[in-house]
Length: 277
Picture (cartoon, helix red, strand yellow):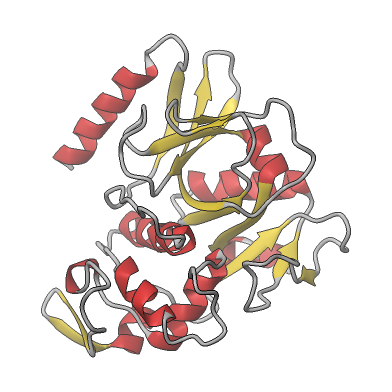
């Protein structure tokens, strides 16, 4: 709790700078910001972070191993050599191969563990995976006007080598669902386009400027909060996986219109969208 309070103090100080005056409306708890380095497994970092936030906000402390997922992916003969994927790839991987806590495997230089241990409890790899994310607990949603709304569709993307499907929602419905999920303390993973000139990692902001005319599948981040600027414009607080070297100690403020226009998919607990299925 002390570390989290100290972080909020630092964040408030950073947000007082002239070029970015943000007020935090909601800030959910999350595990420490990590650095994926040259790895292209942002999907694993972001989706595991969403699951961690989901548990922490329930009062259940969970910190999960990205290294285990990266190592397990080497067993997937259909997977791309660079280990790219979508947010749902993480869900599929842990249901197939299991999972361990972060402390059990911090890097990929060691063999995959055969058991998972946490707080004195002993699990099989699959038992542990199911304890943190039950089959069907998370679902992917997107917004593509080329397909009927409130039906499933398969995004035709290179990273969708597993042929995952998304529930198609109108853009405004998708944005409202994201805000509701974060406001309720739920774990959310965002997947979308960071090729816009308005996406500035160092300054810690993502705003639309000149839209480049396409939405590419570039990156995944967890959504951990809601904020607004001095003019009342609304933002999502994103937890990135590029270390803590930017203005906001690894977090970014994504304008609501950026998320509306540049989202490929959101991954949320299924019970949030049951009314749309």
